Length: 257
Image 1 (tube, rainbow, N blue to C red):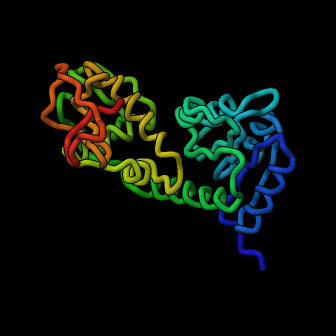
Image 2 (image 1 turned 120 degrees about the vertical axis):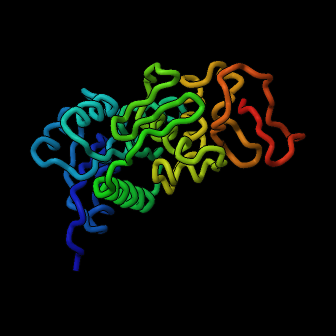
C-alpha cells in the first residue's frame, strides 16, 4: 500500500523524461506531485495548489527558473530545490541567492533528489516551530539582529543575502570557534549533501562586505586544515597576508586564496 502523502511537490522541468522519473520517485516516497513544463505554467500551478516544495529546473522556456523562483518568493515562503545542468560555480550560487534552498546538478540520482526533498522539508518545518532567537549578536564591530534580519558594521547597514546573513549570525554565535566546511553546510543551512565550494564562495562574498581588506581577512579567518572562524577581537585594519600552503602548521590561521 502506498504511504499517505507527506507533502505536495511541484516539479518544473521541460524535459518530459526527467519530469516523469522525478515524479515517479516522489510518488513512491509518498508525495503528492504537480507538474509544469514552463515558467508561466509553474506559476499557474503554484497559484492553483500552493506546494510545500518546488523542484525547479534552471533552464526553462518563456521564463527561466531564477525568475520563477523570484516570483514564487514574492507570493510566499516555499522551499525550492534548483535543478541545473550548468557547471559554473557562479550560476549555482546565483540560484541559492535568489532564494533556492538547495541545488542538484544534472545528471543526478533520483533517490538522492528524494533525500534532498525530505531534508529541505524537514528543515523548513523545523524552522517554523523554532522561536526566533532573542538579543542581537555583537562582536568585532558587527551587530546582527536575527529577529529583524538586519546586520551592521560600525553602524552602517550591510546588504547581505539570506545565506550570507545566516552564515555571519552563526559565526557570531560561536566566536573564536573553528568550523569545517561540512559543519557550516550542515549547521547553518542544514545541507546533508552538496558541493563544499559553495561554502567557500559564500565566505568569500561575505568577506567582501565586512572586511576592510577582503584580500587580507582579519574577521573571518581561514584555519589551515579545518575551515573558518570569526575572530571577535579582530579589527578592520589591513594586515600582512598569510597564505595557506603545504608548509603551514595545523591550527595556524591562514588566508584563503
